[in-house]
Length: 312
Ligand code: 13P
Ligand code: SF4
Image 1 (spheres, rainbow, N blue to C red):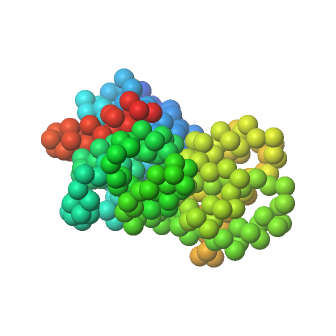
Image 2 (image 1 turned 120 degrees about the vertical axis):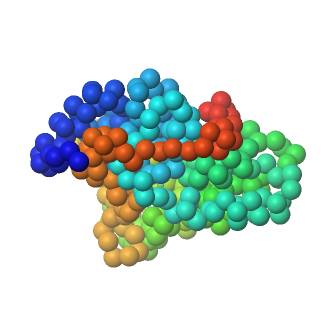
């Protein structure tokens, strides 16, 4: 096992491994700030999937959660995909077991299946098209008008999309353990304390929280919105990792994280935060853990993902 660099040397060690491996580091906005700073590309789940599909680097190092690395492999199978922690899951993907989803689908014969990218490859393979929070409205608008639509696994995103499109959706009862615990009461109190602040929220939040938002969108959508908004103060109702990019790109604006209902002052995804600089360095130094999957599963999951990219 290679000798672990001191914490202050991890960044330069990662940068030299990047050259040695001909690797690209992709990171989600919810990663810790040091990982975002060393990444070549930071994005939301749609932008990361698009970048993973187009990269020419030999190795993709994916700093996000398992389903995101899996998506990169499905889209770009000739590249080696490494991830700092194979166990970094997601409550949406983990609580949608393929067998239960197949049974749910069987109860709605003829339904067109739109599946959120926060799902396993097996569940993607049972879907007609994949969506992310950036393009879910568009995917529903493009779905056949004469068929019922199953929308899985996030029921809150589904409800929000239902409102935007006016299409009735058959919802799988999944939720994100991070976004479902924002406190409506504390959000209202924050709004009273900061009457000029704009409230920006992710559509995975509960409807009663979303009703207080001035802007609702994916992490990338939220970031772009606060950068171009004339407002100076924002209450941010999504995972706290996004604050790093907001504060870096708009140092003259104030960003206040909305609190969850568990006594903490901000809300972090425990899965996303399983990745650390040391694990990132180690996965590159050891070229492990690597994301691998059977080719038959990859091909079956590729079809609805490719459709999403074509429709986006
Ligand atoms: P984005 O599509 O906004 O990146 O969301 C991913 C996610 O996991 C939100 O919790
Ligand atoms: Fe999954 Fe929620 Fe974490 Fe996003 S924030 S990875 S949806 S558990």
